[in-house]
Every structure is written in structure tokens, then in C-alpha cells.
Length: 113
Image (cartoon, rainbow, N blue to C red; front, side, top):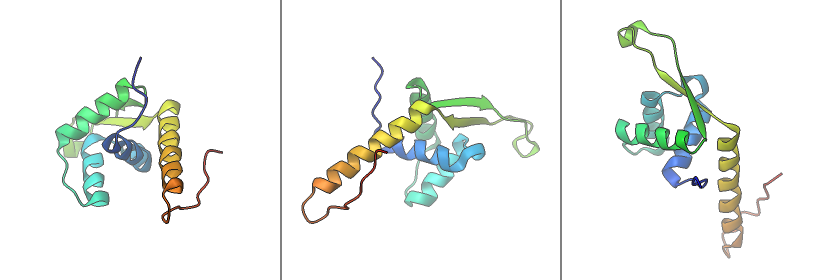
């Protein structure tokens, strides 16, 4: 059986794919990760995580159009699947549930529509 839970880094990468939408290719995802988290990331870590998320069925990818700034090479563009969106929702709901159980730090948030 395939693992359906997300690690923290996987969750962040999956969220960034959703945020970047049509610009969700590995180099751009790495740039956005560094901007959002103020932490460095290797392109290899991003590539391996994207591959793992695709293997779990949370992402699909297709080759974009060639661009002159890339010497005519094409970019692999990623998109979140319905399973990927559900995994994000499940992860969010689980974490909110934990926060709501923490005395003194409860967010009082309710999700899981």
C-alpha cells in the first residue's frame, strides 16, 4: 500500500505547487521555497520530493513549451491531483485538531467541511 501521509517538506512542496500553478516547475518551486521559508534548499531535494509525490499519486506533470532563455529546453510543469488536494486537507485538519487540543494555544479553528 502506498503511503498517503505527507511529511512536512512534502506538504510544503505540494502547497507551493498549488500556489505557483502554471509556473510550478522544479527551479521555480525551489526559489519560492527559499523565499517563503527563508531557508536554502537543493534542487536535488526538490526533484526527489516531486518524484515521490508523483509516485504517491499527489502530482501529475507534463512538459511545457521550449523557451529561448533555457536554450530551447522544456520545463516539467507539476499540478496537484485530487488525491494531492485531499492529502493537504487531511494534513491541515490533523494539525488543527492537535493545535485545538493544546491547552492555552488552542486556535479554536474548525475545518473539514
